[in-house]
Amino acid sequence: MNYPLQLRFKILALAPQIYVQDAGGQEVCYVKQKLFKFREKVEVFTDSSRKSLLATIQADRIIDFNANYAFRTPEGVQIGSVRRRGLRSLWKAHYEILDGNGQVAYDIREENPWAKILDSMLGDIPIVGLFTGFFCHPKYSISRQGSAVMRFTKNRAFLESSFNIEKLGDLPAQDELPIILSLLMFGLLERSRG
Image (tube, rainbow, N blue to C red; front, side, top):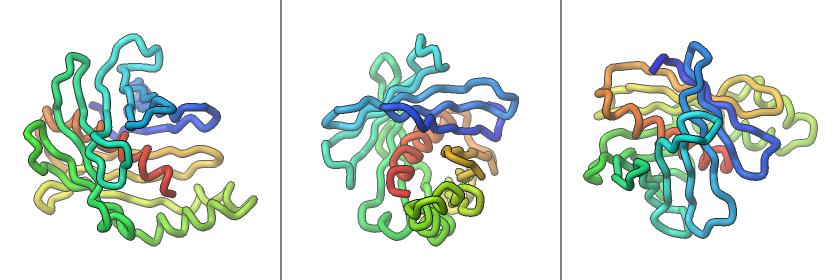
């Protein structure tokens, strides 16, 4: 993939949608979250035409506090999952990316929790909330055994949510898709938290 990747959340839509483009402006994938499901289900397509399904992301339980979100190919093969670290994630976001065997492969950690809190608090104030996207930029690092391989950053934006995924280090090619899927689900979950 041609990094950095840009994620744009469509604001005026009933179901949450994400458009993902690479550094050259080419569409990498398109995400549409299903509404009115007891268990969270997200479909990831190769592009916004929604003709070719790339993967699905589905929660293993109804209440998502400690849910495990499994990634499956269109054939139903599980290629990994992501889970929130429960109470540890209340103050500072902490998620684990698991491989296809259920072993922790990577961590997603919030770099500065104050940025998210400021963004969330100011975002609720009328008129001021329209401009929080210009000066609050939460950042999250994706690491393996303490070594950062990617960074997920909220961009400056007006009336929309936009994030970048930067590649910081080397990682195996087979790990890229599970990490990207983890960050898509992470973006959906954290966006609702602030």
